[in-house]
Every structure is written in C-alpha cells, then in structure tokens.
Image (cartoon, rainbow, N blue to C red; front, side):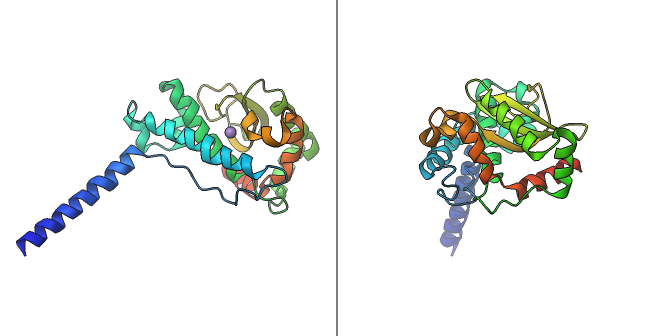
Amino acid sequence: MKKSLALLALVLFWTFVVTTGAALAQPFTLPALPYAGDALEPYIDKLTMEIHHGLHHQGYVNNLNAQVKTFPELAGMSLESMMAKISTFNPAVRNNGGGHYNHDFFWKIMAPAGTGGSPSAELSAAINQTFGSLDELKKRFNQAGATRFGSGWAWLIVTADKKLAVTSTANQDNPLMDVTEVKGTPILAVDVWEHAYYLSYQNRRPAYLDQWWQVVNWNEVNRRFAEALR
Ligand code: MN
C-alpha cells in the first residue's frame, strides 16, 4: 500500500515536471491554419501556404522560444505586450516575435474566396470618409505593399485618434511596436515577403496584391475594426 502510494506520488511528480517543463520551454506555439492549405487557391497556392505556415512561421516560433533563455519574462507575455516594448529586447525578439504576431494575424484575416463577406456599414463609412472609396483604399494599400523595398508588410490600421490609415513596415516590424514610426491597431495586413507569393507570381508583386483581395476575410476585419473603436 505504502509502495503504491509512493509510486503514485512519483508518477504525479514526474507528470508535473514534464508538463511544466514543456510549458516553460515552449511558451509559443504555431497556431493551426483556420482553413485547409489549398483553401485559398488559386489566389495563394497550396505549396506556398504549406511552406509559409509550416516552415517560415514555425521558424519564427522556434526562434522566439529560443529567446526565452535570454529573456525569461517573454514566457508569460502576450504578443501585444511584447510588441509595445519591443525596443527593450534584442533584434532576434523583434524579428521573430514580430514574425509570430504578423503571421498569426495574416492567417486569420484571410478566408477562402467567396466566404469572407464584405466591409460592414461602419467600416465602409470610415473607408469612404478617409479614402473616398474602397477602390481608393485598395489602390493606396497595394501601393504601400508594392513600394516597400525588400521584405515587409502593408497595413490598414486604426490610429490612436480612431482614424483609418494605410502604412507599411520593413521586415517583421508592425504598427504595434514602440519602434515603429506610424503606430496603430492593425485590422488588415498583407505579407509582401517574396516567400508569400514567389511560387505563383515570381517577381510580379503587384499582381499578387491585386489577386490577394479575393481572399480577404472581411468578417474578421470588421470584428477587429469594431474592437479597435471600443
Ligand atoms: Mn511571411
């Protein structure tokens, strides 16, 4: 009886050590895609999605987890809090923390063509007020993405004074970072790294940007817009 209790205690102890240890070692995990890898075809091909999510995004997650040894406080931190004080960490946290946040965001604001809905009445009114029309927003957003030299992102954000703005960032920076010039709450973003489009579009980034609007998840953009206004 004593022996079995001791054994049970040992098992419980080891379960605790193993699960806690795993949680501490890997606080950040790759989120599953909210749709199948081929769901965004023909606008984004399956192989691109698989490499982008399974290798690139996984790489940012792994590299961010490796930084927990240097900055143990990262383990309990939300990505949003991390972005707000990104200047207090090293470039590896900036690149990989940004990479994790940006890609997690990107997968969610896309949906299979025909399923993403359209801009809400509130968002449409804000778009018309700021840009004149949805077409004009698309034009400026695509221009921000097309003219971002090298790698980066184009964004639609809600600024501190609750206005819409189009902006772009280099590398894996984003508008939540304290180091970013134009700050705000992102509600829409497109990845313009070559890894996001090269297999289907090669060097034709503007063609990718034109086609990409077919897979925007407006329902999610509407939700994020409403949340940013609160
Ligand atoms: Mn990417």
